[in-house]
Amino acid sequence: MLDSTDLRLLQALQRNAHATAQELGDTLHLSPSQAGRRRQRLETAGYIRGYVAQLNPALLGLNVQAFIQISMASHSSDPVDSFHSLMQRQPEVVSVWTMTGEADYLLRVWCADLAALNTLVHQVFLPHRAVQRVQTRIVMDQIKHDAPLPV
Image (cartoon, rainbow, N blue to C red; front, side, top):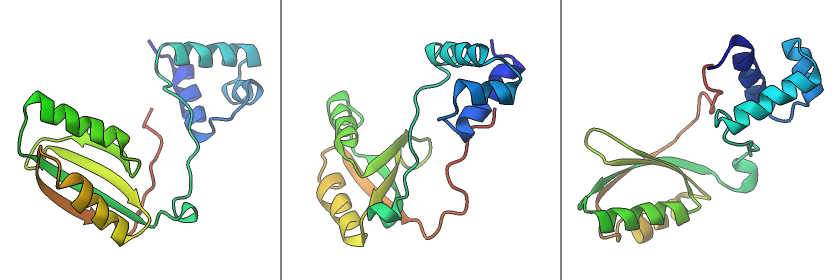
């Protein structure tokens, strides 16, 4: 069970995952050791899955972001397992969701350019035996970047 201090701790860590126990203690009006113990407890309980750096895609040469909807031709376990494995191995694919509605999957991808996106769609996704249809939506601009969870 999370109390209000736990929620404030999670909010603080979403703003700055590098915050020290001293900084967290100051923010939460706790001692550094209490803040550290709370963080450890939330990590152990699985509320905090890890810490990552948010990188600038453009500075890394990743200039095209797209969302790709995939409809499956087959829903039997072997082709679907093979598709899931492909998604795990494909570095351009940064997120995959199963969906209700017309498409079975929604993928978020980052590519260097349109040629790389075209290659990904036509040489990786479309040839897969489980894939029936691929629809690509290229992101023109991202108005709100990935935000902290509303805790």
